[in-house]
Length: 250
View 1 (cartoon, rainbow, N blue to C red):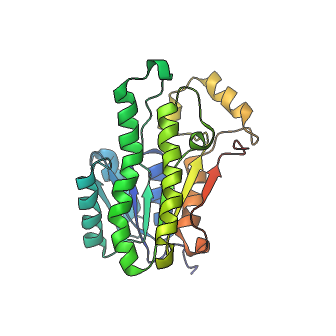
View 2: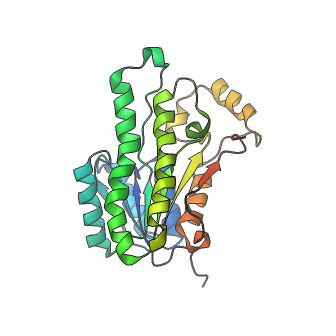
View 3: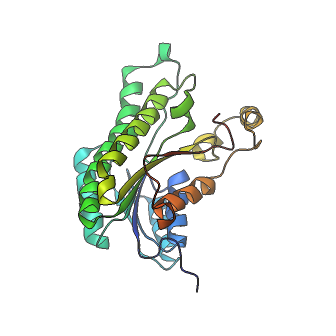
């Protein structure tokens, strides 16, 4: 039997019950990891995903937790380490968009995006690193965006949150490297998810034309890169940003 890449590892994915988070959770499970995932609500989608993970022959458990709450994040990591015995991989994937031009952007539009996308990364990384530093191993993966690298009109709040994540990733990598804990970021480009499904066909087509590979990516494309960063294949990779964007970033 082939050894799976994440055999024996425990992973936690935030914003895990849909979109890229769900693809990550399932991909990790297929590679042999026990998978914990969180979302704001423990709903039908979460229950379904829990079953799907368990059907792959590994342990799977969903948690209701607000990643933007410091207290919730501390509790979540404590629960996961208690239920699973340890924590090897953290994927900070929870995120929202509140797109609008700066002239129309409200203070709430700004605050919500920064709190949910960026503060959540601080909350969970701080909680998880305590365990990882103790066990002298771990991989933290932050879900940034090509928008964090190049900006995008109508997304100043989102771009700021995703760029902030990159600065955070690089700094944390320098702090925790001596204990063999790694921290990297993935910058997805235009990926087909529930979020992008709402866009009109002509807009999607226009987007695809600008991408050298001439198509949108799939959540699985992001998941494959996350498998690499979560596994020992990337044991000498830290403080990096890997765009998964079909060539969009120049």
